[in-house]
Every structure is written in C-alpha cells, then in structure tokens.
Length: 376
Image 1 (cartoon, helix red, strand yellow):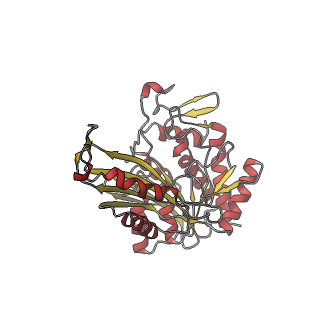
Image 2 (cartoon, one colour):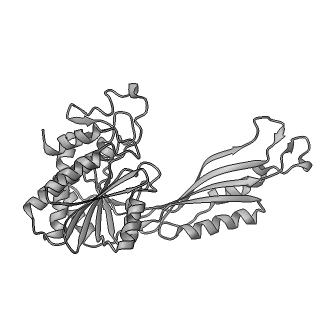
Image 3 (cartoon, helix red, strand yellow):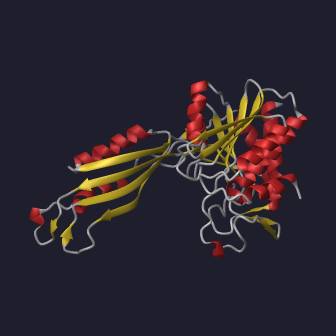
C-alpha cells in the first residue's frame, strides 16, 4: 500500500465532522516533526489549526487544507461505512476521500519527499490546516490569518488542495474565487384581516417589487475570467399559517456571489438603497463571507499550468468558478493563490470517493510544484 493511500485511509477513519479534528492534525504533526518541520498548534475556540514550516525566509509557499468533513448523512445510504475507508475496483471510498483528506495526505507525502531531496531549499515551505472549513469558518483560517497579520507572517504563494478537477486530474486550475455576501432581511408590516387591507400593511406586497428589482438587476458584465455578479434569494418566510391573516412580517434570505468589480460594503449600500427607495420598513443583517480574489499571470500560475498539463495531457482550464475556499482569507495577506486538487464529482455526496490512481499521482503533482517554485 502506498504512503499516500495509507495516510488517506488513516485520516478518513477519524470521524472529523466539522469542527472536530478527531486527531487528524496530531497524526500529521507527528509525521512532519519527524521530517524536520517546526510545528505550531493554533487553537481558537473549538477549532484546531496547524501551521508546520520547514526552512526560513522568503519566498514562503504554503499548502492549505482542512481536516474537517461534512456529516455523512444516513449511514445506511452508503455502500460501506463512511468512516471505514474501503477500496473497491481501484476507488477509495469514505467521507473526506475527495474533500479533502486525499489532498491533505498528498500534501504531507509531497512535503516529506521535497525536504528529504532538498534539505537546504531556498525559502520556506509550510502546511496550514484547519478543522473549520466546512462549518462556520470563524475560528479557522480566518482567525489564523488575523494572527499572521498581527505578527507579520508573510505568505507569497498558496496552493489549496480543494477538489477542483472536473473529470480528469489536473484538467482545471482555479486562479481565483468570487466573493460571497449573505443577507437576512426583515420587512415589517402591520398584521390584520385580509378583508380589511386598509387597516393593515402587507409586507409581502411591499417587499416583492424591491426583491424583484434586486433579482433582475444586471450588476456587471463579469471581470476577466470571473462570471457576472449574481443575487439569489434562497428563502422567503411570512404568514401565520392562516389564509385570512395579513402577516406582520416577512423574512428573506439572499446571497450575492460577486467579482472584483465590487466589495461587500458597496453591494450592501446598493441593496439598501433599493429597499429604501421602495419605502420599506426593514432591518437587514449582513454576513461577509469573503472578498473575491484573483491571481494574475506570474510564476505561480505558470508553474501550475506546466505541471497540470503534464498530468492531464492538456492545458488546464483556468477558472474562477465554484463556491468559496479558505484561500479567501490568505489572499488578503498579499499571497497569490491557486487551487489544485482531485476530481470533485462526489464531494459532499453519499459514497464520496477518489480514484486511487489519482490519489497516488497527487504527491508527485504537488512535489513538482514545490520544485518549480523553490528550486528552479
């Protein structure tokens, strides 16, 4: 059994449902300490974070990942226990196999190989792990980035191991991510009888034109490789359950995914202006999930493009699509960030899996990136 498959199985066997690390980071820390890494545990609240470094000075190249996983759902829906890793027909099954214990295992093996071959390498190689990526993402990399900012910790390049490939390992290189901004909107009306609308104020009727305007708006035409900004309403709630009562309140949840044309403060102001223009009596709570980031052409993208072309046999698609990742907290430190990882078709699903051949190719892929960036 290969080193990376053995380690991936050991990590999957630890039921690290967010934010519980379940001992994953301790296992990794012990291995990297043996390989000569300096280990720092950064615990915030109930969240474990690991910062392991080798070398000194710049440039600083960090591999970024998470050890937590989403809940598996009904165990009986799985072909085998989600926390008992099993290989069937050349495929490794288990919660976290693709998202992202496979990549984390590959990171560790790649780092061990790299420092063994290049003990006096230029700069610093590092591994940053959290157990709070799949959850609230409050006490994980967000808090670590705050701590790094205070102490002046530099990161020049960051490679996140999120499952980014579409159908073949290496067929996609993620070079940025959209920002995410969520809102909880409360529109206040006056409850009353539906037969006497003059004695009430219906918040549904009042809110609908404003919400329709926000949904229909063309926010922009996109930005370089970013798609246009979009707003989606995800939930509406109002009413008492009776069909003869005008409700006194409506609550709407919506989210904006936005490109670098905008920042969160600008979008908040634009949305609130529309709500005021419609004369709504409202309250709104905003949650800023992270600003967009984009890595321009440079050594990191060039190295990744070359390595992935060698793995996939073709130039990778360079994309900014998808949801969010913890790289959104590292990019504001001044780091250039990319995402390279296994095929994402099964993530968060029943019978999550990764092809063993892909898993065993990942350490070499990451090792080649390290070599190109730090020893070329």
